[in-house]
Amino acid sequence: MRISEFFYSLQGEGLYAGVPSVFIRLAGCPLRCRWCDTAYARDFQAGTEQTAESLLSRAGLYPTRHLVVTGGEPLVQPDLAAFLDVFAKAGYLITLETAGLKFIADLPIHLLSVSPKLSNSVEPGNDTAESERLNTAVLSALLAAYRCQLKFVVDRPQDLDDIADCLERLGSVDPERVCLMPQAVRREEYIEKSLWLAEYCLQTGFAFSPRLQVMLYDGQRGK
Image: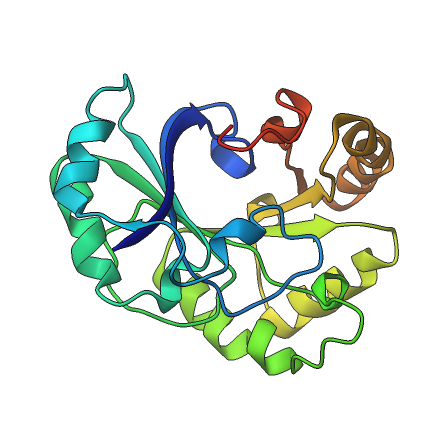
């Protein structure tokens, strides 16, 4: 598997925010989101080829059984199930982070963390079709097959209408599994957006997701 990064940190977002975790970032993503904070992992040739077994040995050096496999975009990687199976058999609780671009059945994961890409993710001048970044049929299949959380990046209040539309198209989604998180690269921006987004979560019952990697480490890579 082509690996962009391997590191140990706190899970920064979602239902397991604050949990010490080993992170494996896979290289390669077909999307070009304007606020992507890991653009260095977009290239499918970025990083180095490493085996799951070698990464398992490195993971064992840390006091956790939580593993986060992220990207890039993991669901477009070949042999993903076999790669994850090495860690699952070793007793790791695996969170797989994805934009939900593709359906793969029977992955040995504990939590599927899906971040649907809304219109706010599109760079000016990018003509990516909505179906390429937001396929509700695929998202619905993933939600039915796995224990999921839906994480939405919110840049401005207008984005909330896009989120409501997406959830309506998906049908019945437990609001406690919907995590809203402010789009921010730096701490000051994160705090500013958190204040009004937290109020919206109180009104709707959605979860407010922290972004500890921004709040604690101010956007440092590998944190």
